[in-house]
Length: 406
Image 1: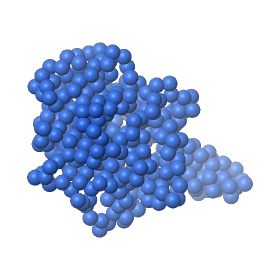
Image 2: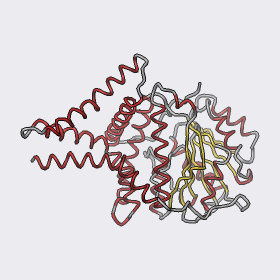
Image 3: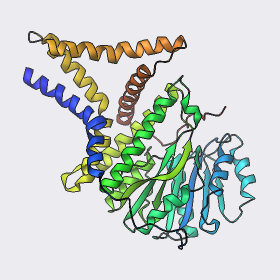
Image 4: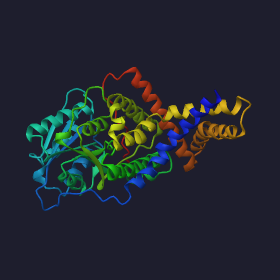
């Protein structure tokens, strides 16, 4: 019995360490000496048609700036088209888009929906409209983006240049964050750090194996021939689209020079709600794409398991490790090593979040404590998302996080 419990403990600990520590190290080794992706388009060549697909719901605070950032791109205007669906917005979003569209009557299509549909369904509709205007093909690329993600002038070209290679299905952007994320209060800096680390991992995955596991949904590009409609009830549309592209044999990479800017939530409750929704969708995707974990998928299976599946199962590993460690520390005559680990885990899981909460109430922010609290809160969101998945998803309509506008 004690051997079995020890196996549970060390297996759980290994899976957590592998996903967050060992796998990134393996990636660095695998990507070492790998050349940057080629071939790529040069600006002097005939560039692909771009259809920017954007679902907006009550985005009056950011939508004008978003549209300005798109049309300020250094990409040829005669190859750049924007398709926007307003998901039954009740603020001034529709008015702002309609007024802005007068400047670009031939390049901007707008559909204000009269009832909520959810982002995936809106994107499906917009992709169908873009395809009706210009057929699917190797020279027609979709950029799927969120209203609060602003483009740098070179972002569109940097995303599109890789599609000269016919094997490329998806190119992800490099999303960074404004100065707001440097505030010490709240969790914005933690979320910024998490996303920056994710971008780095995705870049190395693409460089090493051509199988970046899921783009950051705020802005990414997909060849129209690799785009798949997202079924009703799926919450994480970007991951679904990426995994369907892998099923078709496409490759996915990240482009660091495709720079975009996004505001980051500074509220742990807002971020918890967002991560819970994403977690619910993640488990739906796992149930759909589990066959991509089979050994015959090679590097794709290893990356999927290491980067995503072990992380999604993180709360279960934490619970299993803590329970098995408790038994090992206080049963079977006990063990000093496991008793010390029990003390460390107990402090980390319970005392640190409580201390961080009390210090925050007093206006004191200690960064290491906040990172631990953030890590535990996001794993709690994963657990809640799993429970929501088991209950079933009735629709994929959701309320976006609050925008950080000062």
